Amino acid sequence: EAQVTQNPRYLITVTGKKLTVTCSQNMNHEYMSWYRQDPGLGLRQIYYSMNVEVTDKGDVPEGYKVSRKEKRNFPLILESPSPNQTSLYFCASHEGGGNTEAFFGQGTRLTVV
Amino acid sequence: GQSLEQPSEVTAVEGAIVQINCTYQTSGFYGLSWYQQHDGGAPTFLSYNALDGLEETGRFSSFLSRSDSYGYLLLQELQMKDSASYFCVLNNAGNMLTFGGGTRLMVKP
Picture 1: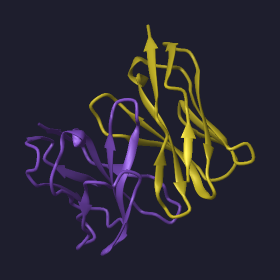
Picture 2 (picture 1 turned 90 degrees about the vertical axis):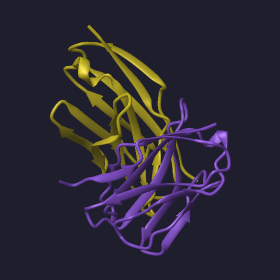
Picture 3 (picture 1 turned 90 degrees about the horizontal axis):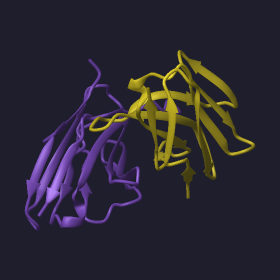
């Protein structure tokens, strides 16, 4: 079954404590992205990756890091989380080349206190 | 950069037809997509227009006019389960996806 798997689904953490949200896809897609979703603001792209070791900033990259060491994995790292990073996060992958169907993970609801 | 505008909310009754409009600004793109998201869920792909014209998938149709920088999603025979948020999405020339702010559709009995 084609899927994108994110973990954890829910996370409450304290300001400044480093955390990683994992994302894995089993479709051999080249493109992977991270989005955050906040009420009234839709989905905003944080970072995206076009292939292994190729990443670029999206619209709201401040405070986040990513890595793409393997094609299937694209973790999101918050080195020093702050309360304004409390949000719902989605990882997605798609094939690229004009084929635009993106597959999303189940989401990670992060609360930073 | 890229930007998309769509209404924030639309209300319709069960069995009716509703059209959700989307206007966009971009310097180049492959096509326009639509995604559905139920509360608490992940966005799921509905349709994609690479060329001008209408694409039909069951009760849902999507339209694109590149000359007008405009598209729409048409939902027919509305059902209660269609209550959700709908996003228009640009697939940009760099294969990035840019989402509109979303339209919350409420279907009433």
